[in-house]
Length: 488
Image (cartoon, rainbow, N blue to C red; front, side):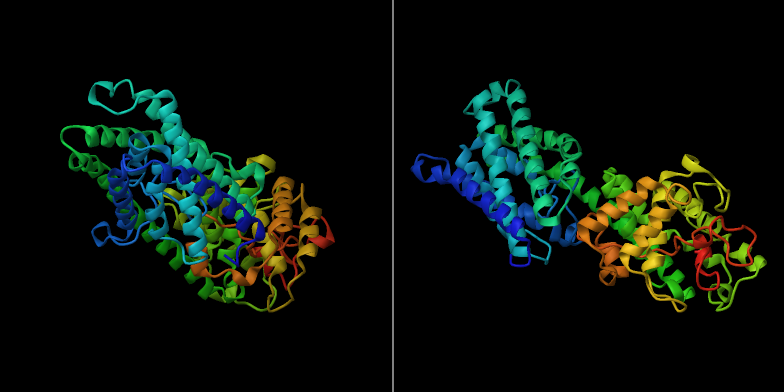
């Protein structure tokens, strides 16, 4: 845990202490408590936590839909009903204990794995204890078949409590461990996971009723079969998505090989775009779209002759026009990839300017898609903070000040402010960005203080080089380096 911030260590320590206090009354329950059911449910949950590694499910897969635990602790889709069955069957202290073994032995990211498992165990114990308290406050105990319809309301309340506690705790750890802005740490967390947890609560209630029925605990296991099936389907989706990402990586690597001046640029722009999107409080699905848009914004360079991309001298007006076709080439290249629908707009319009002097269509103001305005700022910032063959990288404050000067004329001022605020919060560490990291960091990009470098300078984004056809409105907006950055 030493690599974690002090605030994160304190937060995890407090949660662990609170969980221990919730479970402590179990020692006073005596031999009459349902210890055998607690042990059985704890073992079952621990086995369910190992299922993502099962070869029958295609190897290791991510946590399923409706998972909780944005910071490394989460509940797989087929494991939540087991915990909620414990909420309905066991006293609150034992319900808390049932979650601990599986959380401590389940999969976790290699970085700070021990801290992540400890946090996972603490938050699940707290959530289970709170949900069990709510269930007993408004429900009936013990469970029996005739009471099943009556128990739907208290079961739903318990599942909602389980979801709410996890959402609140996860938002707090995002602030403490990953330095999320408080105004966005909890945004949408409850609404995204409430529906799946209510479904899991219904499955857990069915498990609990069967557990107490004449058919016994073995019959309760049948409830997990459809959950396993749904998670198997999710695994297939994940493998398909992984294949899509591999395709994207291959396209980016092809661009990097063809245009050696901007190698690594695509990944940095993708992650800088995510930083802006998160600062603006965009929904996670749009953040993912912007990540892809930033990574692929220059894919159209595959259609530009290599001799032009590698030309050391100034570009002629005709060569300039050929290079300015790369947004349209990129739009056509990704046309057949369904999940990149909004990203295509950013690829096509990331060289447009608010004053209408950009390309390819000269759009003005808010006629330029929002995603394109985000990528344009990320792209320009990277170009200014990158070292090129014809100039050294500019310091971050200088680059940000240049973006501010161009805001309202060339760039969207809101996007510029968002990038500046994110840089103030997380810093700027471009050397940490690699092609592999860009794919591995899909959920938390922009959170860990890593920004990107773009392919357009603020002085040259969308501006023609010296000798081009569009006159620069201000001398300081003209591109540097023999006109190369103006085309990027």
